Amino acid sequence: MRAPGDRCGRGDRAGQVLREPTARDLAAAVGLDLAGVAGRAACDLLVVGAGPAGLAAAVYGASEGLDVVLVDDVAPGGQAGTSSRIENYLGFPRGVSGRELARSGMVQAVKFGARLVCPRSVTGLSRGPDGFLVRLDDQTEVTARAVVVASGVRYRRLAAIAGVADLEGRGVYYAATEIEARACLGREVVVVGGANSAGQAALFLARHADRVHVLIRRDDLTETMSSYLAQRLTHHDRIVVHPRSQLIAAHGEDRLDHLTWRDEVAGREVHVEAGGLFLMIGAVPRTGWLRAAGVELDDKGFVATHNAFETSVPGVFAVGDVRAGSVKRVASAVGEGSVVVSAVHRYLAST
Ligand SMILES: Cc1cc2nc3c(=O)[nH]c(=O)nc-3n(C[C@H](O)[C@H](O)[C@H](O)COP(=O)(O)OP(=O)(O)OC[C@H]3O[C@@H](n4cnc5c(N)ncnc54)[C@H](O)[C@@H]3O)c2cc1C
Image (cartoon, rainbow, N blue to C red; front, side, top):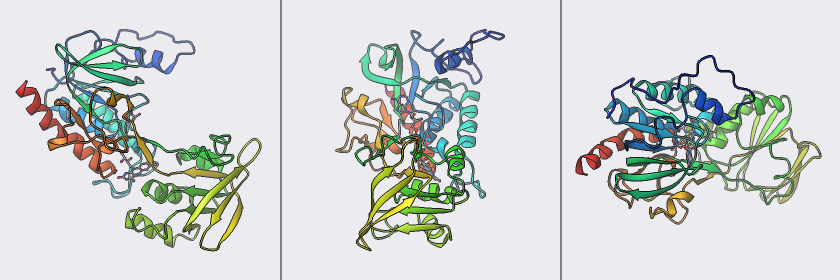
């Protein structure tokens, strides 16, 4: 176990000049890579994914004296980090940006002594003599006595729809941040999807775009979106929700120019000049690497958990969006990440 503040991995590289560094070079220079992690004695807990669930597990684990390593393949924050404003997280009546929440969570985890390793992807998990061998994308192995999987989900694409794949990043987006919104200033935009992420994107985009069309497959938003969000969408004067409507094609040469969708209620095709298409159509769990480790997944690939977030492999736990039956909210991910630490303690004590 480690004392808070006893961090390693921050090599003495002050003053070093990096020329055209990769993200990994930069991470190594500021102490976010594997120095002091790989090839040393087993850590108590390795957390896969630094979204809200993984950050919470790292904060609670490290603050309770566990030697915690937190690995993320992109950067801390996960999906929440891409949200411009989270309005339903307890304690932030005016909302909080996902980036700010992630930054504070990361500082808090590191303050308690957790070691953050990113950008590094976990690609495999097996049993070793001293615990679990967690394999990273460059085949390095880190030994951990327990593992918390908090690897979340990845957005679905609509690559089969004409024009969509070609225009990705040039008018077709999977996140609505300031950057995308600026490109749509004063234009019409289309959001596809009826869940909370679609609702949030629509409200955010309505601050910049002339009009926001939200295409949903169902008759209304009641079953798929939190009612506070659905209400705000329905009463917003620049947002139009189109029930039973499906995107057919995206058109444009250099960038998206216009869109066609099928409106089943009116029984016709609709063409709209659009500055942006935002695909918010759900997500698939990031669990491919767990199958080979013998961890039980459900038919959609989410991790099945039993008592206290333990998976079918004792010592491997799953929390947040990646878990079968999870609620898919920041608060529940944070809650699960916090609570799982007591189960980790019990497991470590029993071994
Ligand atoms: C645009 C948007 C807006 C949202 N708004 C709200 C909101 O207002 N309120 C709310 O409650 N919820 C909101 N949500 C949902 C909320 O963000 C998620 O429920 C929450 O982020 C789930 O947290 P998580 O830690 O389980 O997973 P994620 O946030 O998905 O984080 C998982 C992390 O694991 C990393 N990872 C995955 N696989 C690996 C691997 N093999 N190796 C290493 N790292 C890996 C990923 O890169 C990612 O950083 C929103 C989601 C989106 C997309």
